[in-house]
Length: 293
Image 1 (tube, rainbow, N blue to C red):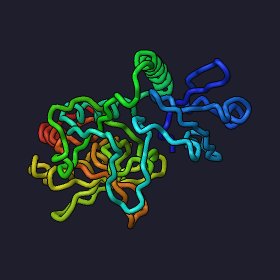
Image 2 (cartoon, rainbow, N blue to C red):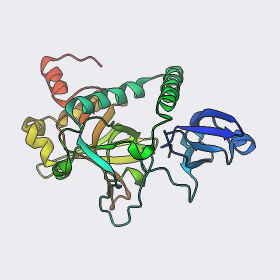
Image 3 (cartoon, helix red, strand yellow):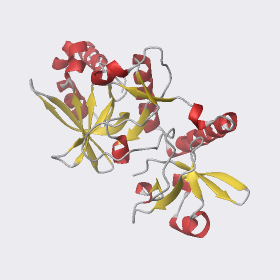
Image 4 (tube, rainbow, N blue to C red):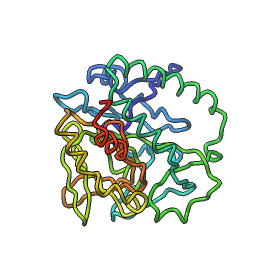
């Protein structure tokens, strides 16, 4: 699962950023093996390239055993053995704002629409920004850096300091989720597969590259927008009338033990995008009889 998309190649005095999709088994074993490291600021975890036979796009980077990410690294995780939420020490929680959620959903949708050429340009832009950030922060002690985690679950609201701002919402394709994402807020990208909607529960099932996930909508979601209860059937209708509907949701990642897969619980009323549209906008367009698909 490609949760890490870039690595730093270090060899003697040489340092170069390497993109996941530029790697091949031949290049890795001949040049990069034992010399790839995490590209996040002040993280020196050693990485290895895991090859998925027959499908290069499913190959991924992961840390070496006994070479952990730093606690301030976005890829740092603690073992989750009993299904309970754990936060690393020094973590500061902040509620994800409406603007942050909407921006994350919009960015996820735009990324999914990019052509291969456009993706390469975007990666190059991100590489330049990352290198600039590395140079800017190179003198900062990692112990002085504030680790901000954005949350949407009301249960964690009591732990949030109102004055805390910042943080970012991490985007994940359905097939890119790992145990490290459990109990964290993520923006999930997939394609509509099925809908289960009743008075008891509402679930939108999505798929990406053969991996499935249930998006579940919690009481807080409907408490903020009760009218959403009567709109979910429009997603199914929209999917029948159009091909490959992109579904993006921002919520808390959980484990569906029955299905042996991940799920996402959405609490915020802004936490769902149906092919770039809010659910209320989809309903409005059906009422008016026109679309911008």
